[in-house]
Image (tube, rainbow, N blue to C red; front, side, top):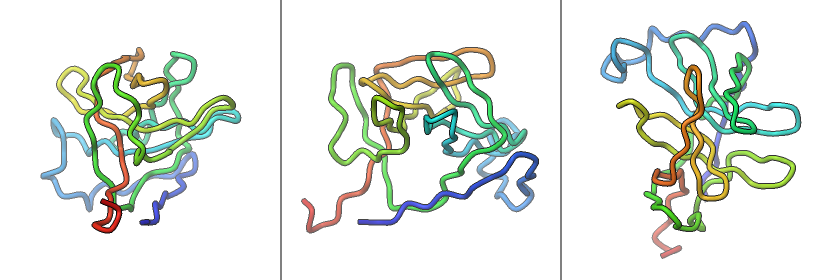
Length: 150
């Protein structure tokens, strides 16, 4: 099984986006990156807008913005589509947790932009600048299966 690696980014740290290939920019902005952050005792999956160094997460259906987070930067992973009512796949990557449940990472388009958010109870909740978008149709981050696992 592959190792998943996260980069700790502390508040006040500036990420150098000048080395990012412009082909990855979205609407002229540096790309959005998978992230997770601690919020109290909860480890919440979400994303960071590299252009403003702000992380966007969801807690209790509210938008939580953070400047201290962990950026995902390595792992042999893929995406699997999840339809309404589908269970979480057994190879879904556990990315976060609350006191009561394991959290996974999902992605879906919001106003034409692909964003990341937490998956709990088969719902993907994505933080935007001012609200939380919930969807039951999304893709979930999964570990790629080795040939011998199939």
